[in-house]
Image (cartoon, rainbow, N blue to C red; front, side, top):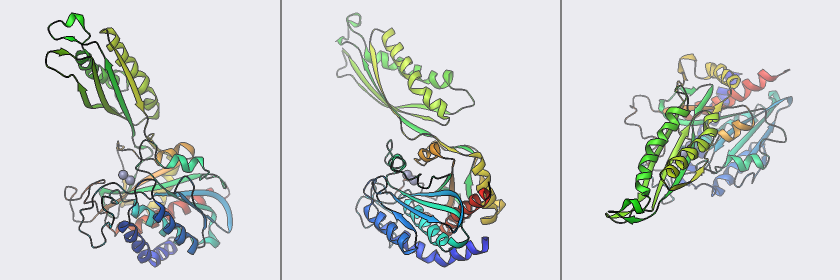
Length: 401
Ligand SMILES: [Zn+2]
Ligand SMILES: [Zn+2]
């Protein structure tokens, strides 16, 4: 089976890379992925895969039903680019001013198309169904593109039993793939606070309520949510990045506005944060004679990898990259990823595909969301093989289950 996957991947490598460069030249922002979706549709149709366009905006679902009955596994890629000016200097750099594939979603889409091309040639021996989910708007936090696809039935008809996804990961070297069971990526929420006091002359504080003094207490008190309400063995961060208040040196300010971010890993901790934060900010503000309004905007939930699927993926990866090239990720990253919406619906597994060229240091490698970001193209065939092998391994495991 593995030689067959490898030889089919080699067969389609050039086509896959060409598709990737084509998408790289024509990046589209979140919810504007029309050209990309049309390209995806045409490649899937050519490969004989059933296509369902317009699933959750520009989302495209491909369905490949194998000739052998079995379970249904989904593979997901995102398609959107970022509002950035590309500075890679490539001959095939973005032709769209101010828009760039700086998160590698062009590579994700190309790899998933590669996987569809490979698997479509294995239809006769395929024990089940593979669904290919091409998702829009991954970068559109806090809404994202996954929820609309889910609402519009991407995981139904047939029902998806498990889902795999992958992100190019520049801190890992080409040839390696990383993952871990449990949390892989964090939740990213936003916090808006408005402290209300009462204005007065700076020389007569007893006649006012000082919103700046309240804000000062609030900022310190907020840290007790992390230190006193979250287990020391769990991860959480509350950071205030904006504070605005006051008009004049000798006037007691009547209002202060604060904005911040709240990052968590455990979904239970994420649930707990708004309530704890609100109790603290209101309590402190009221205790000092003022008040505080809170707006808490939930972003993407934490991305939780299924432990059983992690075993499936690792068993597949041993054959694809070899035991020594599997990176057992120790700690989750606190960046958000809306694949997490899928993992709330069905067991899911997300992986990081190493894309830092060999011999290049981490310091010399532009990170994600940098206008010089350039994943090593050599990594992409391995990405195709990984996706295909995870799907096959899962379907084989489920045979007769
Ligand atoms: Zn991104
Ligand atoms: Zn991304």
